[in-house]
Length: 317
Image (cartoon, rainbow, N blue to C red; front, side):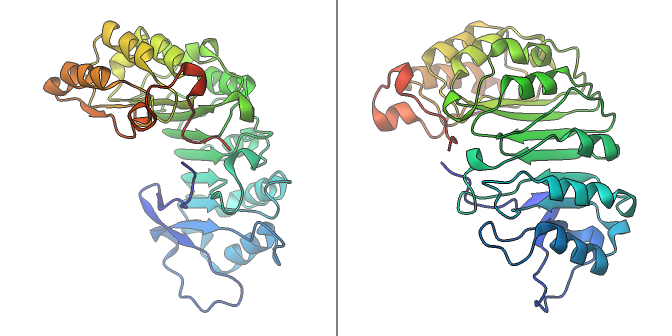
């Protein structure tokens, strides 16, 4: 699996591509869409900051509610320092901004593990009214432990996340957070986190409002599942997402023999390495209680039984 499509919506608003300088496209009302600002990844004739300057000149930024930062020039080689600086510089002109995604870049523009990032701390510090924040790309990504009172939805997508990034997320004070989606990734692409790094999240005390927890796209998915099986945080969840990783029978067995999961609305383990018998056990245990169980993309069935070392995550390079 690769990321082949751009975001279709953000903050419940449809994504709209801010047009090029020569375009005659009619612009929608500022508050009605999530504005995506992007330039060519290779040999761009316009820098991202210049496109953003055009945007702030022609759009009533006081009404903008959602922004998507798409590709900047040479994202495979350059961190988005100019992007972040431009956004911070426009802070006072974006009083209603509630959602921001940094790095909506497809594989045709730049593979996910080649996307350079930097520290996202300044963005979250300077935009205290944000409710939704997402970032794609783990190369050079920094996520210092921080405090944000209003953030409800946090997504960090990567082919590999460093332990330092995961620890920073886990140590952050996010009392309003309801939706947390973290792609841990693989060691081939910088993934160095282990189960101990997510334990503060699993404790259930740091994120009192959490209802959706995704710890996915991981090469240690069995260990994650085993830790989640006894984690206090699960009792308050509506959705548990352990998808896109290397989950096998051992991890599923831990889920079945751990604390009850029948209170969930959904268990998502799509892209997994479970046997047919284990898939049936999960379904039989949870679906009669009304839990939706996503067992799609069964890799073991497609590729015969794979040894643990031969499993792979859904998104890596």
